[in-house]
Length: 117
Image (cartoon, rainbow, N blue to C red):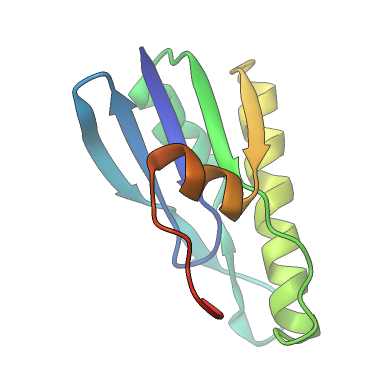
């Protein structure tokens, strides 16, 4: 088994996981673009990274949802990152799914949190 887990966001990262645990960690590649030089996921560099990692049995990304407390710009940025990641992974024909934060926390055995994150 060789899988990729992705924490979506401009400060996000991806981990390559095997039956032996985490074997690689990479920051998500970003580039300055758009009005005011706002950062966004670099789709070409992200594609190159996934190609370099090679075949995997699954790619899993955190399923983010809009949050009123984050503000419009943050929600838009997260949605853009989500779309770039989904598009690149799909174009590379890698098995892919989104998991909610609660679902992946439970899957890896994190204790339930009391209160907000």
